[in-house]
Image (cartoon, rainbow, N blue to C red; front, side, top):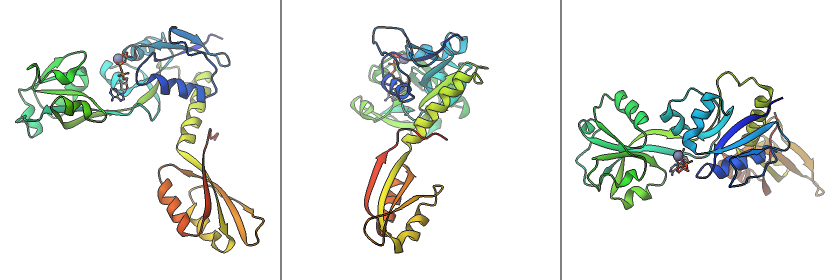
Length: 283
Ligand code: ATP
Ligand code: ZN
């Protein structure tokens, strides 16, 4: 059978985490920086290393079967591809930002203003939604310097910390879209058994990242209270300790309510709490 191809970013913000995700799925491949394509030794897959902007198009055209790319790029290129899985990394927000002393106060004040961006399509959709007529200036990089150069009244760009905005005398104004890395597939290919297998592996890695393995000791008389707090899981494992009247409880809890749960468990009499990462959870 012909190998499937997955396209990932060659270098940049998504490269490392995309490679790590595939390695955590048990895929064995060399990650040569110089090569454009590499074969996975133990799975029917080849990996293409591309510029992120090209990934949705390659997948749409079937040159690659799968891709890992930011939602912002998929939306901007308006590619017809399937979203198979949100991957939880590469999170960022596309925002409109203004010079600190801008007279713009409400969204309507953007009418008639010019906005510089590398995301003209996403911005246009947003402006249409709010019935705002602004002049979109498409530029390919260093968008944040446009107002300072007199090129535009505002910008629309990806912001993660806000530091770049500040150092260019800008302030965030409104969120246009949020984004994270997505596993995409060519239309109609999602039932391919190799894709199903890979997706299952990816999902088990993602699930494991969201959960922790917890072991704690508790006096038997407090056990009911502890198991009550752990009602989210099927049933914790309870093992007697050498010390009379004490047991060890093993369970899995979600990262989301980790601190809240841990503190409640402590108040309910849990001692010697050990928290461990989980590699994979197979359902
Ligand atoms: P390429 O050379 O592949 O075209 P690039 O310079 O266009 O790379 P990067 O800066 O590496 O792209 O960003 C890749 C993706 O990472 C973005 O499209 C976005 O989805 C995501 N991302 C996450 N945080 C940020 C951020 N702070 N700034 C820019 N992109 C971010
Ligand atoms: Zn790019």
